[in-house]
Image (cartoon, rainbow, N blue to C red; front, side, top):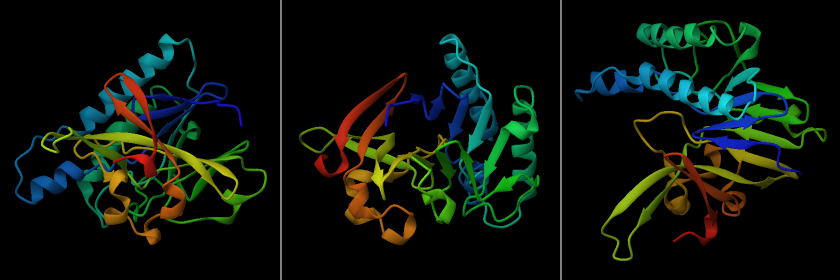
Length: 242
């Protein structure tokens, strides 16, 4: 399958159809930390909007048009009702509505999205031969023979890199690209800036097959694309990482 997409920071963009894809937001995560006694400022909404502005600007600079934006679930963080989350995401929605009509803002339901505050969520979304899903649960249309590519989140992939002495260690968000059941799969990093995510070069320690629709044996053959500031780096396959 010809590559018809590009990575833009933590987002995925399809230039031909103008679709921009965003991974897990977890709006309310900073609030949860505050309620746990960790003193951090309420900056999550501003960070999300600032990141989106930067991504929009980068795509516009390349003279492409964004026609639709898709959020891959876990838009909110609390499993139950938290009124501040609704207010926070409403700020994000108001920003988005300056750029898109409501029908072109697609919200996929994740496992954290037990409450649909705005009545906009769906289990999956299909555009042509591409399916978009959160990734914690499978739906039969996603694996229809007409579907060539599946985009999902949920895993929050990251890699941990260290020096040869194992003293200095740094963690980076990453995209994962591979194949499963004859489909090309792209797993998105989370859009949440506070934490990096699941370390894919420690899959045997951090990953159980029930967690995602992609089993560990398949994931080990996925290629890792590390997000670092303005660049994306191909680190090869998960199974070859130290």
